[in-house]
Image 1 (cartoon, rainbow, N blue to C red):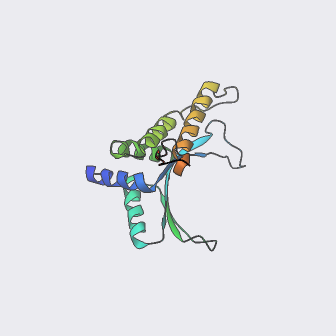
Image 2 (cartoon, rainbow, N blue to C red):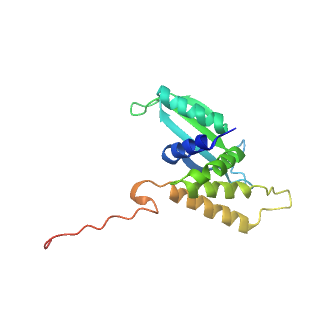
Image 3 (tube, rainbow, N blue to C red):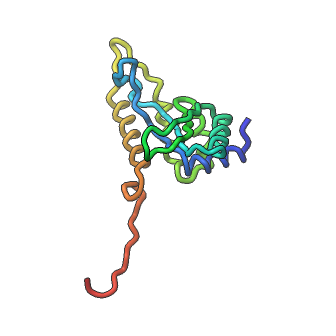
Length: 167
């Protein structure tokens, strides 16, 4: 059972280190699955250090998911530990973390809402309504915008600078 302190720590850690995202969903033949399109995911990649592995193990204990060790494949890469949780487990983690999140609260809310819309499964004569597809794609675009870095982020507002004298 997670304590309030555990969840507050996990929220602070994921606020700074995690990516809350929606990832394209493919079938075994690498075709995008119409009824899913995307799935919810929280992931963290950290440098290969014992303290980083311990932090990821705590997250795994709290929420589940998998931890992988990735070796550097290129000279500019470094070995890292990678934790990922997806689908309903990611949604549940978002629900638990959301009250404590500061920076990624909207991310978590979007993932929970998106996961809640995944109950529709089309059949041979039953297509997913366009309204649901459009609503899901709006959420995909929003999460992408929230995950942009630097001055491309929607909340970025360049500071006004005062110039003294003529140019």
